[in-house]
Length: 365
Image (tube, rainbow, N blue to C red; front, top):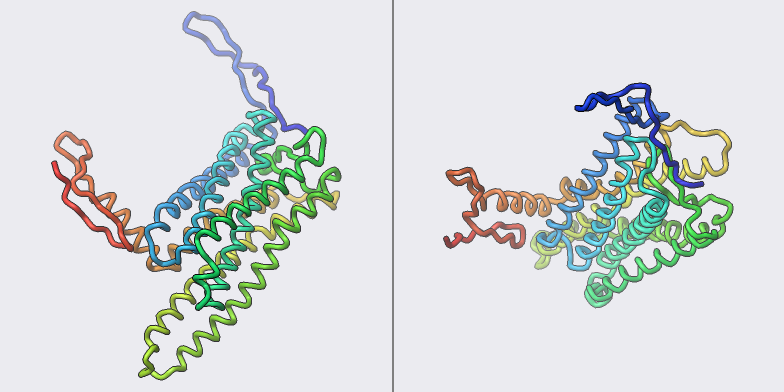
């Protein structure tokens, strides 16, 4: 099925030019009501702005905060990059939401559909890596620094992208010509991969097993285990007498690890909440002859995309160090400029944000 291309047709009205000539008015005739167009366009624009802005903030703040370890920080930044690129793909849905057709051509449709699926798979595997990282940090605290290194983390993320690319190519080449399983979805206003197409279904199952099912199993198992271990560890620390030599330090470590685990659990839980409705609707549409309501289809699709901007709010509301670093960074950027007499913004101080603190240095004029 080719992307739906809408050809502009002439309306009955005319416009009068400066020279007095009558020219026909061109209009796009769409099947969606005006209210539907307005609501879905606003929803897509808001989702786009939230994804781009929040992940841009993540990429700025995460390197400047000490609330996560070096490897965890790298993995979270990798996740932010993937989510940011999902926002870029979402930008291509804004005009189709307004005009009710895909204006960018078949080639761009195939690229956006493949790239969006690749990023979603990479996000799942990266989240799995974050869960495993937290699991090792809690259950193997003494060996963690030797087991999990930044070099190995970079290798793993590279492998994640390579695996996702291989399996997406494996699915997309199931048809000839390739990419025939990518279609424009008139409800979601974007191009998506049709995994339940009979031509690609066997390969799609293999790809789903590696990129969706396996990460889900590992994420669930590791998070369940580390939650039990963290709670047990916290109870043992609290049971130590107050005059114990390592009591205060142990309490600080326990509190820090528990907060990191809590953040990971919330991110993972929201990931499941975002993906479950979409997968359920896609399975239903593949095997049922009864269509679901357009609003439900749209909601399930953009609930998945909302997972790409929720993370920054999780960090903001659940991590004091992240909030402080963000506040200090914004304050530094605002304070280092003052308005001159002619209204031009001029730098007054140079600020460096280190460990969540903004340090000012007078600017030499």
